[in-house]
Image (cartoon, rainbow, N blue to C red; front, side, top):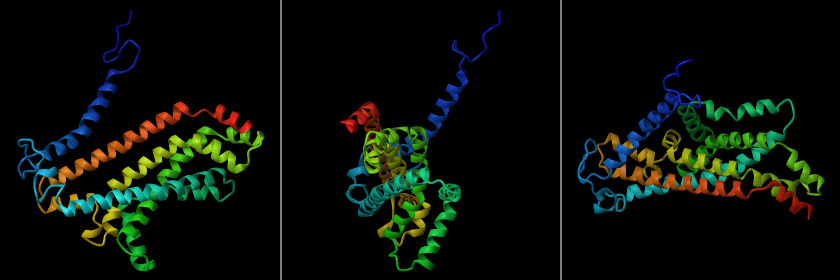
Length: 288
């Protein structure tokens, strides 16, 4: 009788895979947890743990996140860019994904390849290219928030297209064809059948766009015109070089909580849509 292999359970699954997974998760979370803990320091040190306090959140009357106007500006700029980027990039990306999915010609392959360019291009090169475009070609576009928004939308739209196209390939065309057979027009079939089935992918795209925009440093930095257009990543980078207080850690923690809440909300919405979404019920409504 052959002896059982080490690190394998009775179902034949390698235990070391689970071990490596958990080690990776812990290693990824460790820097975040350290930064969050330093934000609770009662002193100004960013290299050692001190007694816990909420001084840098609202306790300090000058340098805390609650009282520092420069931190307010950075947070507002970041959330505004991310929100506008979601509202602009996601609808355009969904429309482009549907169009590319249905495009059948010799040039469709080239168009699909071009959608991958912002993803495979190093972000530093992409940021420099956008800077040159807005300073040398489209000089009439106001600098600052406007150019930052255009840059974020341009960069994140490809993520939306790829996510939606993956969902379209999984859905297939049979549901729309069935709706058309039941008397629905093309617009009705898209509105009543296709878009509800794309709901989870659309919400996933929203979260990817939001997280990418909030986290972006290179494009925002190249297209920033001063302190009035600084985002949280720019503020953290400039503050870290100048010897800042744990208030920047507190600001990063607040942004982390906002992002986690957004992801949690999206997960709940997607779960609700999956439990309630029934193509057969939609077909019955069209038939009626």
